Length: 68
Image 1 (tube, helix red, strand yellow):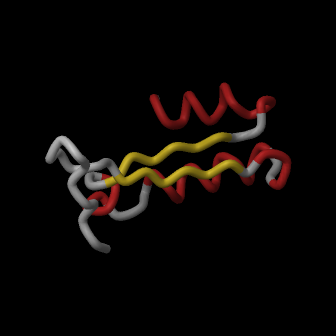
Image 2: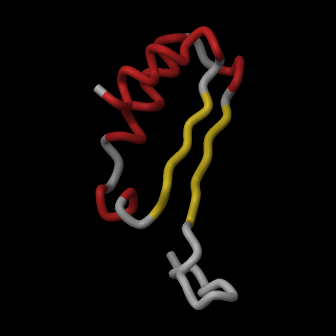
């Protein structure tokens, strides 16, 4: 993975990985996906910002999983 290029101010730009799966998973699939992301390589997660966007009905469950 290449490091992000400096922006115009000379600062490093953040690398963002986002997942928006909307209605392609059920509640169990949503929590399983987030568990996989959370258990992923800490060396990668320390260098990127990870954003997940679950379907609205599963938002509270996923938020508890991420923050709790």
